[in-house]
Length: 359
Image 1: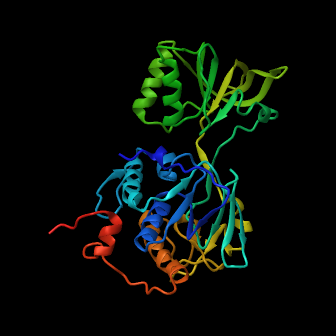
Image 2: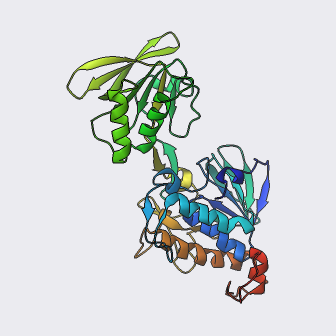
Image 3: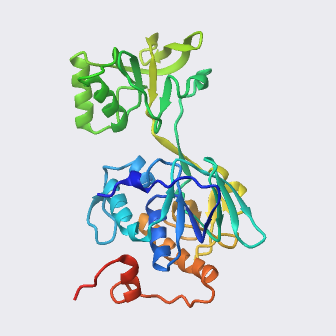
């Protein structure tokens, strides 16, 4: 299994690249592979801390049944296989950052900057950001912002030690329940208390996980509260209690030292709307011959694009990435005819992939 964390590349003041892929989900990863087959090197930017996109963040362990020649695999397995496939292309990944600006240059390149200060000069851009960059779903209560990163943490944040603290976990899925169970059952560094809170006594987590959570509550290792946060109790610069409205209509105050909001991620189109590409209902319009946008040398593949007959399927994204790679090659390799070669017979492709053909 590939080590997804090993793909992180250090930020650089100015990176020159033939191709910049924005989004490291399945379609973005396959875009890297198709560009590599055409000997077009690329860098990849993604807002998440590891490659994988929705497959890793939303359904890593759920089965997928419609990948060609793979009867069934989980989202995590699909990403691992794609990372193995692109490894010979040696792409550079720039993770935990979003593209913030795209500025056309006089020489036809694009100056691209990210929220981490990374700057690129790219000859082509491939928007493969799915339905947008994924950002944590935040708890919205007046005054809570000043406690972010100190006492309030969201999906994707580095959570500090919970030893001796009163911990409240918000969430209903496997990630929330598993986290609450992990600290409640910890043999070392136990918190003073663990409270799991959701607006109702129903969960999207696997039934077995819910059963474990209920057993832990029955044993007194943690508790569950069906409620919603409505306010904060603050003492100086410390959050001390969370005011919650319970499902039975009562209002209670929960002591809290650490508030962990595990509500997952939500997609945001973000600054794509400012890049000059034509949009239709918050999706990028493309030409289906090359999947180029209204801006030459900017391509869009996967769920972020739209065209007549568009289907939001991973397999369709793979097709779009293939066509986009060939479309970009006409710009990037104008003096080199782009011929379709087959991995079954091409010695050039065998060298690129580092494989010895069978037979």
